Amino acid sequence: MQVLITHGRLSRTRLLQFQAWQLLLSALLLVALLMAVSGTVYHFVFLKAAREGWPVVSPLVRLLVRDEIAQRDRYMRENLDAMAQKVGEMQAKLVKLEAMGERVSGAAGVKPEEIKPLQRLAPDGTPAKAGKGDKSGTGGPYVPLRKLSLEQLQGMVSRADELADYQTDLFTLFESRLLESRLQALMVPSTAPLEGPVGSGFGFRSDPFTGRAALHTGLDFPAEAGTPIHAAAGGMVLARDWHPEYGHLLEIDHGNGLTTRYAHNVSIEVPLGALVKRGQLVARVGNSGRSTGAHLHFEVLVDGVPQDPARFLAGRPPPPLAVLAPGRSRR
Image (cartoon, rainbow, N blue to C red; front, side, top):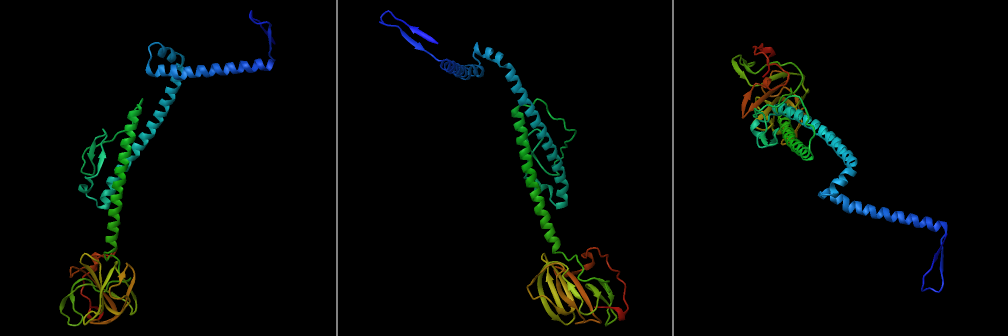
């Protein structure tokens, strides 16, 4: 392609010659420039006009991009509906968790007044007192709201988050109380010190030496000499002495004024002041002290007052208070 340039002041005519690839490159550059200019105008003018609501440009832009806006709104609505459904499912699970917490609170021994300081959200979003003392009832089928706005969805998520925090604190309290109850149960003498029948129960009986009625302050477990004796509960060795009537006597302190005694032993296997756990070997059956034969005399005392051990031993019914023959009695 040739281009002639002439001018009256020029003494000669100038000739410009262009190749085909040069023309193609120039056309491409021109198209790219026009696209960049149009994109800049669209971004900085038309979109700004649509957002700010310019009188003339805004309706025109919305008319041109209404399909794009409708598609974007539909996409956002579908996502909001999916999120709302998930939030509704989470709220339903939290309601079940709350009901479970009310049942567990009774098993954990948590009183309603202990839960009152904890706050939860009522169905309307206002703070309400929690616990069994709350007589307001809620329930019914779950029907999620439709066409939720973003603000409503954010409010639902916020309330669900606060309710989850409340349930976390509540179950932490239950866990602590259950652990405390378990520790206390480990300190109660509810396990028989040895396996076998009870020879003489707690209560009045005919004394095997004098034949007179006398109070028997524990349970007798007849057994062969040397039979292992195990701690009925965890505690600390309070005493291990020789007693004229009890013979080799072992006392274990379980706290809260609760102690157990293991009498007439042939040997004591734990030192003074030692910490023992439930089921640990602490002594062996003997015939020491005021005794007519090898057996274990087991006592439970609360603040120094003898109690019926059968009330503490798990799974063992109270023994009959029958008067045994002198030849079969144990002290």
